[in-house]
Image (cartoon, rainbow, N blue to C red; front, side, top):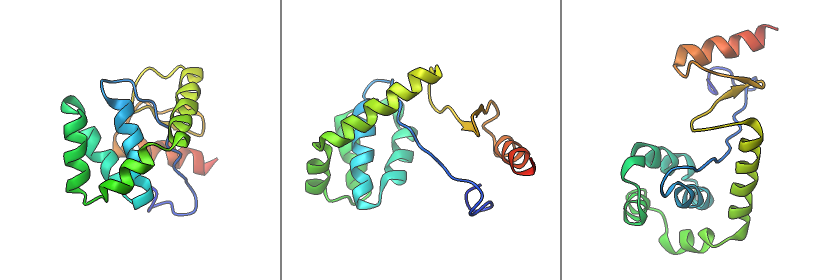
Length: 127
């Protein structure tokens, strides 16, 4: 949708870690952003969420060829924890119970299929 509607839509991602080991995964993904790998590692974490642990996070980071020393330094950055805390507060205020939760122009999207996104975005753009 970002490619199809270039310049007309934007994506705002918020962290809402609430599963086992998900906060550590969110922290690592945000740290990986410094190396341009946020979305890649984020997708891998979602694919592996049922088996995510410290070892699996490390394996995935290495598979993506992240500089592990840089990653470990960035993980320690207090700004990352502050960002996650703010995102969690935002989510609780919205009543979010799980992920992924998607809003389009403030309206909760129930149909997460490609067609659901297409319909919701087209509706907003036609207004």
